[in-house]
Amino acid sequence: MAIKDLYNDPDSFKYNSKGNKYTKDIRGGGSSGQPWIKAPVPDTIDQLNNLTTEALSLDYPIRGGKYEELAARTDFARIDRFLLSYPYGKAFLDKQEGLNASNPLMESRQQGGRPNTMQYSGGRNLMKQIAEGGTGFHYPQAGLNENELGYIENTYQYVVSHKPKDENRLVALYNFKVNPTPVDEFTGGAIARKLGINDTIDSELFFYQGGPGSLYGLGSTTIRTATDAKNQPLLTKRAPNFIGPYYQTNLDNVDVQSRPQVKYQYFNTLGTSRIYQLGDTLTGVSQDNQIQNTYQQSSKDFIRVEKVPSVDTTTQYDQLKYTMGYTALMNRTSVKPGDMAISDFRQNVLDPSSVNKRDYNDTNTNITTRVGIGNPGARKDRTNTSTPFIPGQDKINITDIQTRKNSDGITGFARDLIKFAFETIDNNNPENSRAMFFRAFLTGYNDSHEGQWDAKRYAGRGENFYTYQGFDRSVSFNFKVAAQSKQEMRPLYRKLNYLVSTLYPNYTDSGFMRGNFTKLTIGDLFVRTPGIITSLNLTVADEYAWEIAMNEPEGGNDSDMLEIPQIIDVAVSFKPILNVLPRNGSSSAILLTAAEGISSKAYKFLNI
Image 1 (cartoon, rainbow, N blue to C red):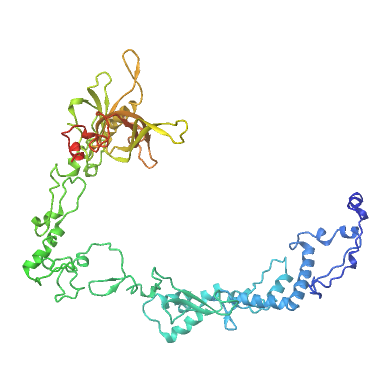
Image 2: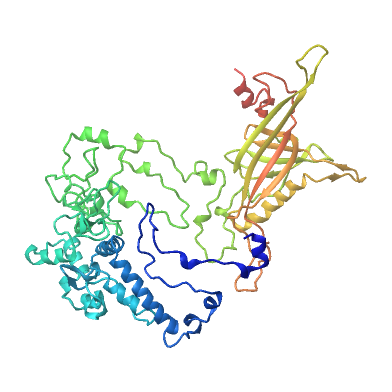
């Protein structure tokens, strides 16, 4: 029949399905016996479309109604024939028995020498569950019979709650694997074996036949202790004294577990005579933190106190004159808020003349006062931070814009580890400049030099000929503006705002626009070198703090502050204009513009 005819007249299709037999469904011939349930084929389409028990069934009183009951009977017959078939049913039942034997060992009721959760009923529980499909009843798969786990007294929760405490698996695990006191082998061994606890090998917690470590119940399951970085077992049983790859030997020469020290005790750190098994066990610091003597250590190999020096006094002095005595060591006090004095411990060694030392209370030596970085952490009164704390202020940040003359040179520059300043030349009076000093938090310095050549090509020649036209130079760097006190915010922003304004036009009295030239100082690389700032890029990182200009309580307003960042990153691009004629040569003041004067240190640095 053509497909076109079938499309125009579907009722004309005839198919004699009754002529097909359930045979020869195995490759090469033979029958598997399937399907396990065979049903007659309807003779007509009307018979096929008749209302069936499935369509008429109500979902009451059991799920699926009458049809569910009929379907359960059919399923029971189908699975029953499958289980009785060979080899399919036999293989299925054997596999289920092996999977149950692979269950973990549990403290449920024993059946046939094993917990009932590891036993299998040979398919009886399965068939009973199928027969009562839709009723809501549930029959566990495990157990040698259908009702084994249906009784509460056979389940894990009942057995565990009604057994003696010593037979509880967690209690037994503690007794055998955690408690350092040995368990009596005669009374405890049977309990351990029943629960699967390995009472002979310390590094194994559990060992039993079957379970997840087996293959369909063949073999055994082993659960081992954790291991450390050296793959050594961590034995909890030894935790009180921790005899393992990581331990600490105390002053009594006993290995103990190493723990963080939470209370400072001198005898744990200084009185080490006992650990070296010296003659006098009282040598050192006693356990009540009382020093027994004031003699210094007599060996450079380890630190200890000795009542009687064991070596010649002169030799001992030569070896130990660079070290600090215990009296001086323990008399040192910690620095507290408000302490501006800094103590050099080298002044307290046995022979101060034998070491290099400094008086950091000298303002010309102390880095805080020498370059004026300030020490805001030394503030004593922290109840009112609006009160200026002069020693905590950065002396460069606090300076405002200054007017300087060309003849001033670097005299009067703010003291810093590296000289750093911008001076914008006064267009009306080039001898004067407006100077802005910032702390030299410099990063990303880059000095790019480029020679400029014109290329020409002549007829008949393939290569280029070059004519030197000049050079170009561009310097870029970053610096950070950071206020460490409230009083530094205003001068910092005044200087930074003025620096940014130099990229904008300056106007004459007649209204003509003109640019701004700036003299840059960075150490001795550039010393008041004129040039042009081509770009300034200001960035505030996400982690930087902002000034919120709020007083307490709510509604207050910090009248002299603004809501602005306390830290800003500034990226600068600068084109220098040298004061001398740039030319090639090792003494040319190009890289070090401070070498422009023959009397300068930079000039002597470049000239042999």
